[in-house]
Amino acid sequence: MTESSAPRRRTPAPPREELLAAAMGMIAERGLEKLTMAALGREVGMSSGHLLYYFRSKDELLLQTLEWSEGRLGAARGRLLAGEGPARERLAAYVDLYVPDGHRDPHWTLWLEVWNRSQNADDDARARQAAIEGAWHRDLVALIAEGVSRGEFREVDADRFATRTRALLDGFSIQVAIGLRGISREQVLAHVREFVEDGLIARSS
Image 1 (cartoon, helix red, strand yellow):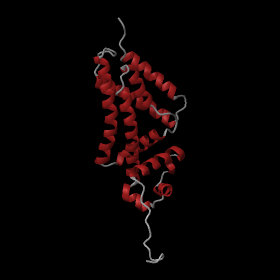
Image 2: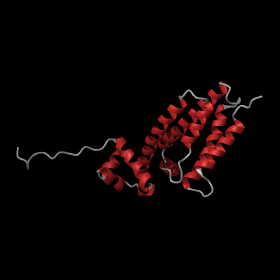
Image 3: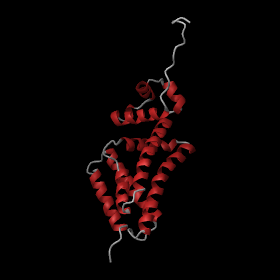
Image 4: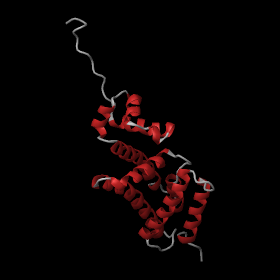
């Protein structure tokens, strides 16, 4: 077989995780508005059509990227919650992991965009979004319940307190992520500490 008639070697497509990592990297470096199928294709050496084969739409790309990012956060959350330290310290670590690093935090930027698009999402996408929220909620409920059982926290309804805590975290975190003036990450952490102290930490008699 001559060199000219030899079959052309095809460049293998990057694994899906590499595509999602590249998408997240683009959000972090250039902002969500720069993440298009064409731009991602150039980044990873694939055509827009090939990317659509993987993801069907930009909405699906964004949701899968969020799920990938949440998987990494979930692993970190699992490690800190499985620790042997006081529940109070692990709760503080949970809050620290939850709150955005600052304005345009890439994970929160993506989270806000996916939830904004959820108004027109199908049932499958909504269920997957609910699964993301459910994982954070279940871990917080379990941590609060453990603290109660060990006498570190007051006797509270763990599910109810977790719901209120996450509502507080979400509200403040959105303000940090969009860069609302007058609200810093440090202020948010202080507000949440005060909320936890007032409502959860057992006081000595």
